[in-house]
Amino acid sequence: MPEPGVPDDGEGERASEDAFGVEGESADGRDAHSHDHGHDHGDDGRDAHDHGDEVADASDSDGVLDLPCGERKDVHELDMGQRDFECACGASHAVVMDVHPLARFVPEFLVEILTETIETDDDFDEFTTAHAMASVMEEFPDQVATVDVAEDGTVGYALVWVTDFDSRRLHEVIVELIVELMEHAVSHAEDDEVAEQFEAEMLEFDVATFVEQYRRERDLETEHDTPI
Image (cartoon, rainbow, N blue to C red; front, side, top):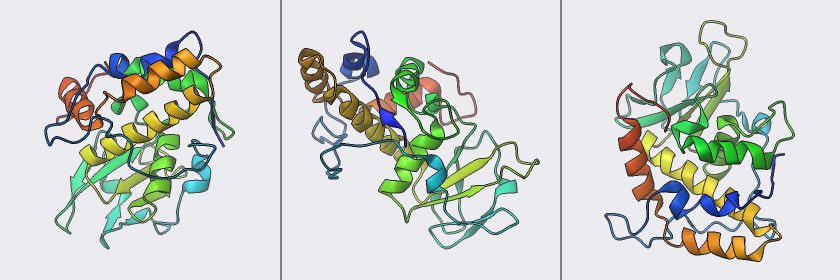
């Protein structure tokens, strides 16, 4: 199971208001510390998870996902550049594949911090999108369908997840979970000043505002998506 490490050289405090580049309240007036959604993770805080343990039996042998809404989706209908799709149930469901980079959700510099400071104990050498989605599945076990299609050479990816909610909501959830993971790492740092500065900055960080700005800058509503 991946364990959060301790950020070196003060990098931990930059994963905050300054690092993410947004602050203040969201448009709906929520408290700025909106990444805390009230889950009790125990004294040890949040760990990233071995994504291999989280792959549920959500499909048949032909690669058809049994969606949380009750509909079914053939993985061969999903394009690798797809981020969501309109379902027959009337809702929009987010799509994530293991080949999607973490930079889909957070800036490249933060991806570098995560990969350098979080140790994994599975087949992956570093923290990946698969680990992020494993955390999402722990939070919302009944709202995520996933399947391993590594042996299907026609799709171009090994793992795919479909959530009951849309891609914007998934984006917010992943940012919330990454912030919690970083808070856990910083809390174990020997430098109390770094930990206090990080916590102070996170009080001014708003997830919804960050996601809105990041999606706009990366143009995530279209196929023209480039890292920033």
